[in-house]
Image (cartoon, rainbow, N blue to C red):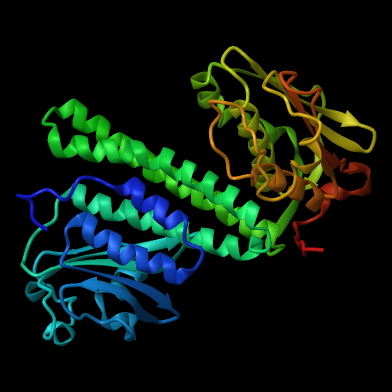
Length: 414
């Protein structure tokens, strides 16, 4: 790699599709090693996974032997340095970098490298190494390309974890992969265009805009990873919640405010009828905001321009009831009973709607149940809009509930 030559024509989308189709870690590392070498024009690529305090070199694709099948202490190799600090490492000349254990490189062709950590669900689980036989300095665009591929690899690893939980249902797996590929394609398409722009444009304003797009798309990658992680932890019953006395109006308002910009972009009016009285519940504020946010995301996704999404909340009997109504495409009667199933997506989705993973509503129902409540979806049919209702038990302040400290609860699957 050098600054006076460009990498091959961008094929990130194809790499993403290949990664999204993997259903085992071995497939992910094999695709990474072969595809990345071809894509960036490297002389060699390694895929390293962290195993406790050691770096394990699982796969390689190179002009000469590297370290496949070997493992080293994290402190003794550059992959360990990158993983421990979650930082991409660029080494233009291995002979001039004190972090490089030169004896390990004496029998190899390597003279320069880039080592990129792979962060999965908030944890660095591996690294992607690209190597060249001559000293050279990569461009910022080339480093960003490797980072984007590493982010896609992280998504693929989360995907593998989730697929292990749904392997018994092959049809759902195919639908889930299709949705994941669409989501990744939507994220990577603008990234690919912006990288191409950075390589070919000299206009400062255009380059600034391309950099903004790259930053935004990588941030969206991270958000998608969080969404997949939540699907794994919540639906497997491994998530611990922290319950506090709160006013449910607060997470409702926060979820709405976070989506004002999306609603404006979709030309959908988003309304909130402010409650006239407090809405006291004992709950995990972050998870409740997440549940309401998922419902809003669905409503905005399936409501055409010019439509409305209205949110209201109040005390009804022993519960706080939140209703989210939209004037969107509606739901047919045969689909309604299955909407809360994990990874379920209707066979026929509305034309021009954004892709989805089929996780959102199942997480909504799960969070409601963890709070002792429930979730319900109603629709009069196609073209008639949708109403989603969340019911969370009301906190009786007369029982000194407000004086309680936080309560933690781990909800098991059952």
